[in-house]
Image (cartoon, rainbow, N blue to C red):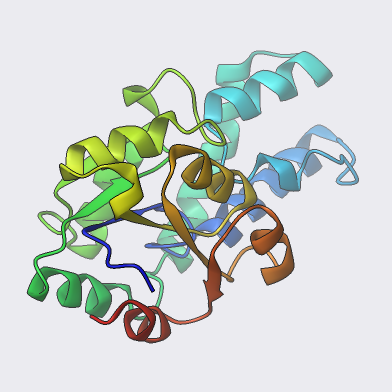
Length: 214
């Protein structure tokens, strides 16, 4: 196992267990609009920015992208208050990185307002050296730009960084940036994550800690 000098985290599905909440909120939007859930792009939306998702939906079905985004977000807010939680073991893993003097950077396709909400809800302020959010890049995952920016914020070359991801788009972004990617199996099956370029998969943060020796 290479010696990593920084760890770059996705947020949804890696730090906070929101992927099922985002999925159900989008399902509620589809149901309210009478759109078929058989839409082949539905699962391909995971790991992409809201602007991309709702822009495509508006182009396909009509309506304004910002109105669709607001409707879905209203469903999400209700579900988040009911079910939002951290991924088990993530704070213990962050503690281990801190003890090892390995900087952690958050690299998310979400907006900064959502990052702030998650940080406030779960007391994560100060746990990451920097945050790269949707507003901070011109090209989103699977483009490498977000993880190249994350490595720069960590003060390390991408090859010295471990990316922790859970989506196919995210894995591809990390690999294209030149990072090594560890893929958490909470959102996609391991075979799809490995096919996208993940160096290995894990299903618990204590396993990841053992793999990288922290």
